[in-house]
Length: 262
Ligand SMILES: Nc1ncnc2c1ncn2[C@@H]1O[C@H](COP(=O)(O)OP(=O)(O)O)[C@@H](O)[C@H]1O
Ligand SMILES: [Mg+2]
Image (cartoon, rainbow, N blue to C red):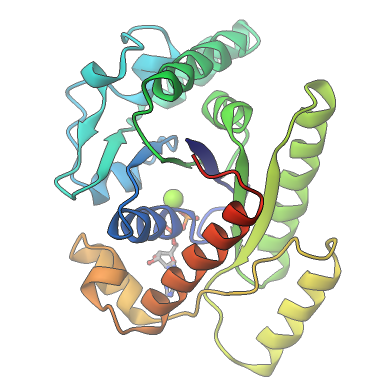
């Protein structure tokens, strides 16, 4: 089982769209996927129309939920994809967790992932992170094998990437372990300015830190969200659908090359 956080400290960079579409493509390829929504804005939860009357991530992190997975994870109605939803309580969790130094939330997240691993319940866990350093995002990064950092090619989004990479470095200094991070360019528009910006971005990080495949901008992505469908299903022949399939291929190739899958 591989745990991947989708994170960037800036909002609107395509984290949720990437989470949803990677989940859809992985499920289409027969992988069993759990999506964890770690953003109090709960866009991913809404996308899947998940019920938040049952357990949510805040229940898990504040110790109210049994960490026994079959009781708390909800099927999404999409084959192969389950979800642990988010709600606004993730905001109150931060206040409580700050008083305790955040350690409890991290410990409970580790418990949950540990149980899922033991039960071999999923092939991939994708965690849609909030655009800030919260108890939930710290917990997410603490259990992740990899981080995908979606970014637009503009100055502010790139600053968000730099800050996140720095936080990851610090986290790994405190607790050294294997954790790969990789940048994903989203909403690519094919202009010269974009091409130059993307080139600059690739050059400002070590080689191999940016996915070869970028996700192109298309209005189909917005339409698909309204229809509550992954763009790979809503408009399977659109550029973004094509790009998300290529991205997952690139990712799987890399994971398989390193012999890490499952
Ligand atoms: N490839 C794309 N083409 C066009 N619009 C996109 C694309 N990816 C994301 N968007 C739009 O950009 C906005 C932000 O995307 P979202 O995934 O919600 O970002 P985040 O989760 O990082 O805040 C949304 O309105 C979404 O529809
Ligand atoms: Mg989001």
